[in-house]
Amino acid sequence: MRTSHLDAASLETLLAAAVAAPSIHNTQPWRFRVNPHDQSLEIRAVPERMLPLADPDSRAQYLSVGAAVFNLRLTAEHLGRRPEVWLLPDPGEPELLAIVLLADPTGPHAHRARDTDLYEAIARRHTSRMPFTGRPVPDPVVVEMTTAAHTQGAQLYLPEIVGTRRLLRLTAVAEARNQASAARTAESRHWITIPGTGAPYGIPVTALGPSDAGGRMPMRDFTGPLPVPRLPALRFERHAQVALLWTSHDRPQDWLRAGQALQHVLLTATVHGVRTSLLHQAMEWPDLREATSLSRKRCHPQVLIRFGYGPDGGRTPRVRGQAVTELVGEPDATRP
Image (cartoon, rainbow, N blue to C red; front, side):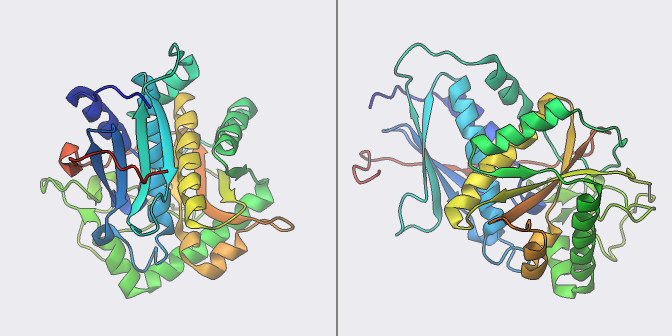
C-alpha cells in the first residue's frame, strides 16, 4: 500500500485535532506514537490517567479514545489521506487501542463540503456547562445528529418529555451518590486545576458551570467543599433536550465505536451552532446505567448528551505534540 511521507506540519495538524476530543474529566487518557515507515499512528491508553472509581472497566476511557480516533480520521481525509483504522489490533498489547494508517488516496481526492464543515468544527467544539435557552433544536438538525451516530455503528435515542425527566432523575440520583462518596468526590476533585498552574489536564475552576437553582439539571459538582469561588446558582432550561447514545453490544470495540459516534454527533451539533454537554453520572453506577436502557431493546447505554442553544462555556486545556513518541524500524508485517 502506497503511503507518502508525513511531514511535521501534517503531523501537528493531526495531533491537534486528536487531542481536541472530549474525555471524561478532561483526563486525555491517550498517548500517540507515529511510525514514520508505514505512516501510521498508534493510540494507546494511559493507565495513570484512569478513574478507578468512576470508570473501573475503562469504558469511558475507550469512549474518549474513540472520539480522538474520529478526529484523526476526519483530519486525515482533510489532508488528502485515506485513513484505515484497526481497533484493538493486538490482544497481546491491551493498551494499544487503535491504529490509524494514513494511506494515500487511491484516486482523485474528493473531499465533501460536509466533511470540511465537520473538520472545521473540531476546533470550536467544547462542552458548555452553562444554562441553555430552552429553544428547541429543529428536527432536521436532530435527524442529522441521529444519522451521524448511526453511521458510526451506534444509535441515538431522543426521548419525549416524560422520558427526558426519567433520564435526568437517574442522573440526579447518580450525582447524589457521587457527592455522598468521599472517595469519588476526591477522585473528581483531583482533576480540578487552579488558574496559573499551567496544568495541561483536568478542568480549570474557571471552566466549571454554576449549579441549577431550580434543581432541574443535575450538573456534576467537581468542587465539593473546596475553598474556591462558587458561581451563583442559575436557572437552567425547564425543558431540556437530551439524547441517549447506545450500542447493541457492550464490548471494548463497541465502546471505541461509540466514542467515534459520540464525536460525530457533537461535531454535527457544533456545525449548526448547537451547544452540548455530557451527563455521564448514571453510567458510572451499574444499576443506574441498566435503568437508563430502553425497554424491549437490546440497549447498552454509553452516555447522555444534553444539547441546545446557549453560551459558549469555558474551555479546557490540551496537551500538545510532546505526547508523541517516534517509532523507528521496519513496518510490522503482522498487523492486520
